[in-house]
Image 1 (cartoon, rainbow, N blue to C red):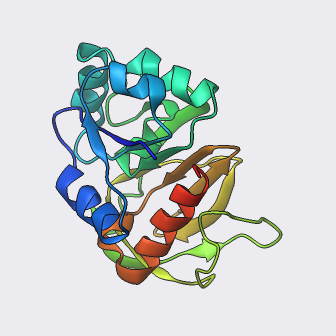
Image 2: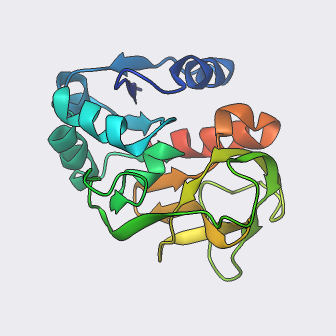
Length: 201
């Protein structure tokens, strides 16, 4: 299985690589479009500011190949900023374009809470919605967050409450995203990553 990690020049690639390695799954970094053409699964990790993130995708020619992979229904997992990239844009960088797969924009978390939202917080799985990513995960499991912006999507299968309610886990067909960092979320994060990889087998 060819698991491609999108390398846009920043992000948490070594931690994600290590988490996959512990699951016995090799991965390869992708900083040019070519590896996306035959990937069995694509992971877009993300940390930092939305503007340089979006600019790097364009500078490296990765935007359209990512959209093509999503259109082919290659299993795709966006992590943190990688999930936020699926929207049209973000309040963090009003002039920067997201991938536009989801309508609307990412919004800042409320000023009344400590920012960034950093550390362990509880997922709240939405009743009546099945989830492939969260199979075997307790509905109120704790996972690790590090962000100041978040979105709300119809495809949410789990949310988190921190000043407001935001999408913590998104699923639509072969398209997946998590606002938290599974590579830093211990046993729960390992289950989430394993479940994602199962969708590509």
